[in-house]
Length: 353
Image (cartoon, rainbow, N blue to C red; front, side, top):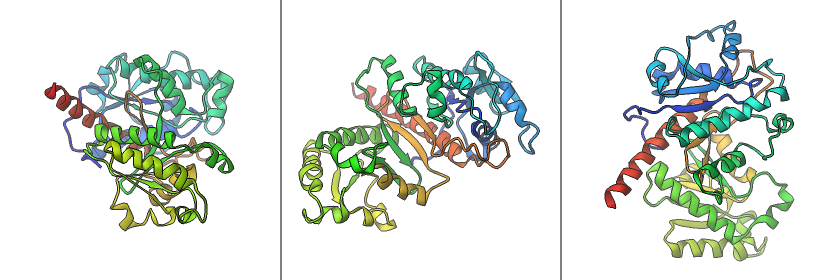
């Protein structure tokens, strides 16, 4: 991962509220309290001050708050208080009890964060966890955060944006080729075109946001032993290998397909920068085993940087002071690093023109 030691930017990170009944407000407070120790890029949260006041009764959660009228003010006050850019409507949330009536402000928090990045007032977006099922009653029509962010990306004049979910930690980066579909249908959704498109996005963004000139992409097989030359399935021969060959011809540093059961041990991880798994659990189980608290959900393929904690709303512990901010802290760190690396990338590109 790139070093977190760089000059603080003049533009802050926009952090969304997330589901107000979940642990988002708590981990936001805890992340801000560790801002200096962790070297966090200044951030502000799109939320309501009342949510933070409710937490003040918990031991260790009473912190100075600063209402700001513009993101620029966050840079000025961040060292002394948590900057809050208030949402236009009150949020009446009870910890651990999701309420669809808060859905509109939860959704607005996301769209406003993206809009502020587009305007150049925020450098990147970090999203606190949401529960999409709670949002459906508020008119949310997307499978999750990622698809909604892709829709919002149309503001950049890029209607063909296809987001790619990457889970990242210091130990491992993985991308699931297919995500929220039944395991029995995975094989039907695999195509060489899907592999090729995903790998191109990964290669491009690993260069732009992670500073890797020729990112090493490893591809897992679908079947046990990567099909064992067709004895255990032919997806590798018919779909995966042709895609890898085509991408190599384009100049991508890609290899595979590899048996998934030998792809994630320590020595193997030294040979690549990111793995493409064929389905959700094949990609997520390894990183959640190695880095359960430190993993970061990163969306590639967007015209802006977006990261998120790799966990959910945790209603069962919300409001009890038990939440841990580790994943949010890592998400904020990574957003700052990616934004900084993107600026370097753009400066180099401009110097070559």
